[in-house]
Image 1 (tube, rainbow, N blue to C red):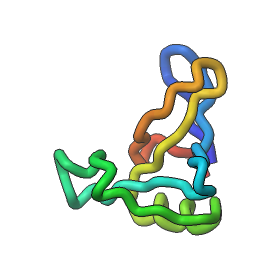
Image 2 (tube, rainbow, N blue to C red):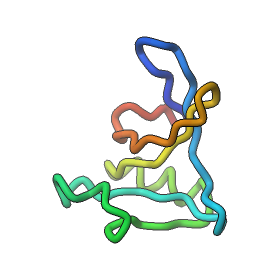
Image 3 (cartoon, rainbow, N blue to C red):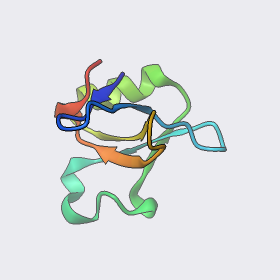
Amino acid sequence: MKRIHPTTGEVFVPHRYGDGTFQLADPRLGRVKHHASNAIRVTSETEAANYVRCGFSLRMRGRDTNKINLIAAENITL
């Protein structure tokens, strides 16, 4: 999975947290989907990809800047 920033061309990849999980957000939660208390955590990229296919956003890290952003499913290439 990756996302290429449309302006800078920076490549974003799934970010694995220190506990080994990936964080996703349910779009049905609207304006509070990004809150840590609402995060869905999975342990594999395959499982994360399945959630992305269902429209969930994924926390991804930029390879150049190391910035972590919540990326909408429609902007992620599987």
